[in-house]
Every structure is written in structure tokens, then in C-alpha cells.
Image (cartoon, rainbow, N blue to C red; front, side, top):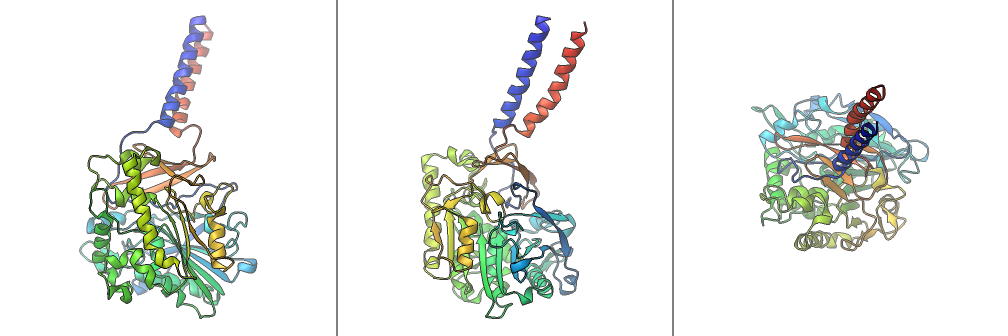
Length: 480
């Protein structure tokens, strides 16, 4: 009997060891293409369940040619305002990378980024879209809208490819969405904020003045770009991977038709797709929210596989704590370029800045980074209050963080490479949510966005599989 108990204890110990290893192991490389993308449209689950808002398709869009890549109708999610916010509007433009070739755009047609057939029918509204005052103090009771992204060019293309049955109609989708929302009451607003995340953050810069022109001059209108400040930066090989990507997007989708003429008169169209060259041409008050060590730009612009074929940056990309001194210096130079590029912009009294020294991407849609007990801070102010202070002119906001590693409030993204998962390194929550990513080529994968769960799901599966076997063994032998 003692031998049976000893075997039982050994089996239980084995189960927990396997579980612990599964929870903490990292392998070597991320399995995605050089131009794959992810955007933080997945959000941490807040303390109470968020509202879910249904998808509305714009039925009138097809008559104007305003369709997704595959010709399906574009859509949006709308939650009406109430009380003092019933006449105020915040529009969030969804992010999701770009497609720069016929092949990558054809692939996108099979995803929610290129077809409304694949879009979620319900979306949770959190962060800047939350309807709870304790989660979104300044905009909780506004009319809140998320416009879905299915054109692959930051709502800015205007062309087609008949042979591949591709419609590049981002500009028309933008116009159709605004027409629809104006007809639903936005034309009567007394204040409006256009925001966006990632590729949607770039779109909020491109369309900022157009948005302003929808309303009378008496209407307060401002714009917020979250994680949309993509730099024309040199990558680790000395090339410019993001410039190559943007050049393909601009040429394929004829984006130059919808870029500011004041920029195009000075620079080439690809350069005018970069925010650093656009912001000086935006007349409407604009707020830039960005991580100085933007996680997407580190993964896909600075050290993508094409620029790092031997994978010497893999560990650093997956976890900033694994960067060596020369890699950290390269990232500090990237931060310095970002600060130099916003220097003139920041001198205007109508602009706002919140550049924190974090390894993050898209901080306005996630509840834990937008407004929570342990949100990222600069000068003891969370992002939500900084944006609110700027929008309502309560205080000038030019918040620029000290350099890494001084900020202890960051919610840095750490990738469990090889397992397609990502952990927020500064969260005590045990909740999780899906974090989906589609590649710009034929490859795609999903990430799980977890918040420092004490035991990984892989480990739980191992325990669930082994414990019944162990118990059955013990019970069967106990009857001998």
C-alpha cells in the first residue's frame, strides 16, 4: 500500500511540474510573416462585464461603391449617449495593419479585416468606449462608435483590381460611415472626438480635418491618435522595412488621392503617409498617444524577420528585459527620433501629447491602460484624465516620459514566443481575452492576451488530463 501511495504522489508531482513548465516556457521564434500585424483590439476584461454592442452594416454604402476588399458592406458598432453626453460623439476608427500586395489583400478578404462576412457580430466596449463613469470618466455617456476596418489602407485608398476582385475603397467607406452617423444625429453634436488605434490611429490623423469640416465652427472638434505615430525609421539591418510596406500600400490603393496636397507638394506620397510628415499639415487640435518603444514597431518595423534573418533580436522582441545593452541603445535612438519628430508639433497650444516609455501598443481601448487602479501614469496622471484635460481645456497636456527603465507603471507586452501568446507584465488580473492577428501574407495566427495568470491554460489541460488517470489508478488499487 505504501508503494501505491508513493506512486500516486510521484504522478501528482509530475502533473504539477509539467503544468509549471508549460506555464513558464518560452521557445525561440514567433511564427508570423515579416509583414504580419496585430493591434490591440482585444481588451482586458474589466471588473464588471462590459457592454456588448451589435454590428450595423451600412446598407446605403454599396450604391456609392463604399465596400470592403471583397465587396461586402462596411459596418460599425454604435452605443447611444445619455444624460449630459446625449449630444456628444466619440468615433473610434478600428486598427488592423495594412495590405500592400495583391496577394496579401486577397488573403485579407478571408478575414474580418477585409470582409464584413467575417466580422464579429458583437463587440465589447471598453476603455474610451466604456459606458461606465468609473472606467471612462469624461466620455462614458457620449454617443460612442467603433467603425470597422476592412480596406487595408487606413480608410484612405480609392482604386480596384478587377482581376483579383479587390475593391480598395477606404476613403469611400470613411465617407459612407460619416454620412450614416450624421443621419443618426451626429450632425447636431456640440462636441466630437475622432480617435483611432494603430492603423486607425493613422487614419484619425489623415481624416482629422475632414472630420472637423463636417460640423459648424461653433462645434468643438478634436482628434486623438493612439499608437498611430509610425516612424519612417531605419531597421536593424540598415533598411527601411516600414517604408517598403507603406510604399506598397500607397501605390496599390492609390492613397495619394486622399493625402494633403500641402504635404504632396513637398514630399513623395509614401512620405506623406507617415504621421511625422502629416502632423504639421493638420489644422484641427490633435492629441498623440504613443508608447515610446511601440511594441508593433519593434516587431514589424525595427526588427522584423526580413531585417533580422538570424533571429538575433528574437529574445529582445519577445521581452524587453532580455535586450542587451546595444539593443537598448538602438531602442533609445528610436525613442529620440520620435521625440524629435514631435518637437515642433508639441509647441502648439492646441496639441496634446502622452508619450510613455513603455513597450505597448494601443492604450485607449484597453481598460487597464486607459483608466484603472494600476493604469500607466506620467506625472501621476493616467491616460484617460490626460486626454480629458486636453479635450476640455482643463489643462495643457505635454506629457513625455523619462527614458526606459524609469517608468514602473507601464503595462509592457511580453510575448511567449512559439506559443502564440502574450502577457502583460504589469497586471495582477487573472482575466484573459482573445488577441487575434492576421498576417499580411498567407500566414495567420492567433495570440492569447493573458494577464499574468498563475497557471497557464496549457498547464490546466495537463492537470485535467492526468488527474482523472491518477485518481482512477488509486481507487482501483485501493480495492485490491
